[in-house]
Image (cartoon, helix red, strand yellow):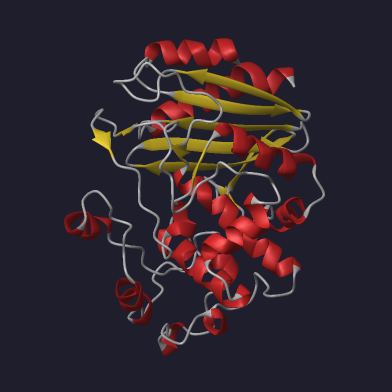
Length: 329
């Protein structure tokens, strides 16, 4: 794996790459590059990156934990779980399930990123409640309900649902039910001011800011972490019998499937012969990421890079799978 990944990094020496790999409970870490293009400090397993939409794996796991605690059921309609200021129009009441949100098939419109980019070019996810109210309360038609359409607003609503059933804000729920039990002390939310943090770049190599923490949009993709902490999370998913791992029984079920993709809660499912693995990618303005794991073969991997480059992330995971994971484990 080191040889394969190093070969890919040699083609992209300006990009920082950090990989955490779990093989039958053993941890391995591979790091390539510097924390920025102007620094001599090498990245390591403690270096902070944006994990982007890999955050959705946490959010879906929290929803599943809430079901295990009998605070909700993923087959429930969302109507009664929303605060009073969110009023679904009559035509779409008792239509959308919690699982529809978590598997991206609610039919609700997503945020208009073009508009948000015009308002806040560097921080488009820094929205307010009024923006969210207008989208939810004015949605009279679910044009593509039951079809897969990736949605950040769905995970924003899942965060609101979690806050209502636990009577706590999302950050506290995340810390109490995942970060503290998993001992992920370097996974950051509101405060990510640390020296061992990458500088992020867009696809063209232009330096970008990390996204600020926003309580509304945080469940969709605003967590910052490193391969050391994310590997702890993977180990729990693969082997532990804690509420976190027990919740995966729910999050790993198929809720949507067509000829192109199979979707669980917060992640997608890939099948290759007798192998089945789960994965979730993430992209921000300043980085790309992927988390994947295979329970049968007892491996898990987290890959973080400091450039918005989904093609590079795909190359790293696919090449490692084809040359290492598929045949050797």
